Each structure stands twice: as C-alpha cells, then as structure tokens.
Length: 305
Image (cartoon, rainbow, N blue to C red):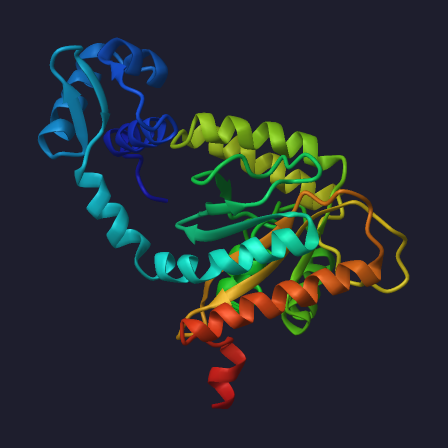
C-alpha cells in the first residue's frame, strides 16, 4: 500500500476547495480554518503555489484564488474529453428536450467519476449530481457504464472494491449483469431508499475531497448499498413501473475505451419497462452517433475488424 503523502493531500484539498468556490477569494486564516491547517503550514503552501502561478494573490486584500497556470493544466487534462464533450452537448440538449429529463456527461479520473457537464433540468430531485466538477467514487455498483466494456482484468479489479462479505454467488451476479449491460448497450439504475444515504455521503465527500478517512467512510456506504440494495436493473421483462435513478450509455474513443458516459436522470414519474427500453435505445443511439464523430468504436468492433 502506498505511503501517505500529507503534503500532496493538503495541496489536493486546497485546490479542490478553491475549485468549488470559483471566483471567490479567501484569506490565509479562512483557508487554514477550512482545511484544518496551522497558519504556518498553510502560508508555506500558499506561497509555493502562488510562485508557480497555480494561485493568484491579491496583495491589497491579502486573499487567494485559483491562478491562470491551472487553465493550461486543465486544457491538457481535458484533451480528447473536451472534443467529445463539445460534440455531445447538442445531443444532450435534444435528449433533455425530447425526454424531459436532465442529461449529464461524466468521465473517469483516477478512482473517481467526475461530472463534466449538465444540460436540462431534473423533473424530480437528483441527489447524485449537483454541478460540473462533482466527484463520485468509482466503487461498485457505481460506474458500471465505465467498466462493462473493459477487459476482464479491469472488471475484476473494479469488483474487488466490493465488500469482502460478498461471496462468489453475489460476485457472479455482478459479472452476469455486466454481460447483459454490454449486450444491451446501456445501464439502468433503480431509485431506492439507499438514495438518501448515498446523497448525504457524497455531500461529505465533496466537502472533504482528499481526506482519506472520509473517502473510506463514503466507500463503506456504497459497499453497504451493494450488499443490501438492488441498484442495477438487469432484466426489464415482467417488472412493474418503478422509479429510476439513472440510465447511462458509453461514448467510446478510437481504442475502444469508454471516453465519456451520458446519463439520463431526474425522471418525473415511475416508468414501465417499455418506457425504460425506449429511453435506453434513444440514449444509446445518441452516444453511438457521438462515438462515430470522434472516430471511436466499441471494443467488440476492434476485435472483429
């Protein structure tokens, strides 16, 4: 297990905190209090980041905010994601208008799902997504759309994040679900009692990003959900109308990797299986059109080409 790096964790926490308050300056005392740092440590960190251009210091008011150097870093990190997102936005707007839902674009960054863009308004409360930049741990069953088309090794690595209490039978259910999702082309997530617990946990995660103890606690909530609640809906046949949380479909790059995911959320009412299937097919059509525009393809096509 990697050794903790407190300096790095503090820097990540600082940049993340400021990114959640764009355009708002903070004093040394305010940042030290928000990040639970002593002033000497905070001052040294702020000075180094200001010298690098990552932070901008207002000498008159003695406050700090994000600096211009981060723009080029963000551009470099976004890269192909930005191009795919630009092509996705018109489709997202059409989906929102046609289906009366909120449409969310997200990607994976490290061990997290990161929201990139939101179009439309949720007809019902959406506890998952608050704004672009929101992060959600990539921990089963969350993020299935990003791993369902991965190779077996990546799928197993993702599944190993599940609670150790899950036996081979339960793990087999997840593996079978991934196969069905891959054939169907989209994931479907139910909206259940777990939603409120998860919403609270993700709120804490957002406010304390970079805190390893908080991350562990949030992942424990997600693992409990995977133990006790039915989240992924695999078989659409014969079920009654239900309240759904998300329908998600992938956008592939030219290597067959999932570059982005587009999700429908904020459904106004309970949906019947036929409605869910229609929503899913419409979403999958849109994501495949975007995939073609960026010269992407599903991994199965690469194997048969």
